[in-house]
Length: 129
Image (cartoon, rainbow, N blue to C red; front, side, top):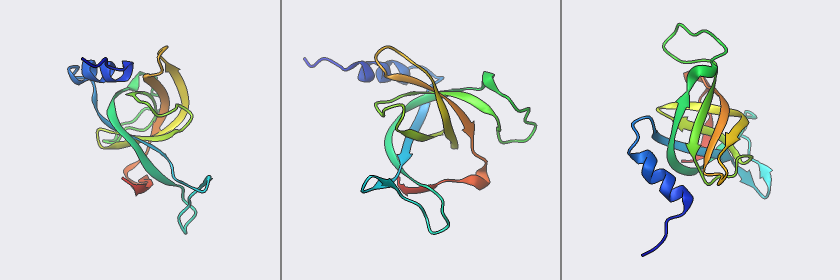
């Protein structure tokens, strides 16, 4: 019998928790060690992994009355991507831009980021999904 890694164990537990949703973590696209930009000067992103996560909107800094959420939130993901390597998170159909790392567990499997949701009109350029 094989032993599960801490990340695999956390993902199995989270799969049974209704708060967790499927999330995609994106990193800044790089060619030869330098970031890749579009012709218009926008950064491009590559998919790093598909995992589980949830959004805690208690850190809202902007009152939002419209259908889309705008404001800072803490997004929690179960990830093997290094915290300083992640750039975007797609969760529940909404992109979240990572502003900073909020916290992590001791095994660095459950990472919390302070994020800002992107408006539907600000969709990022994804090079590889």
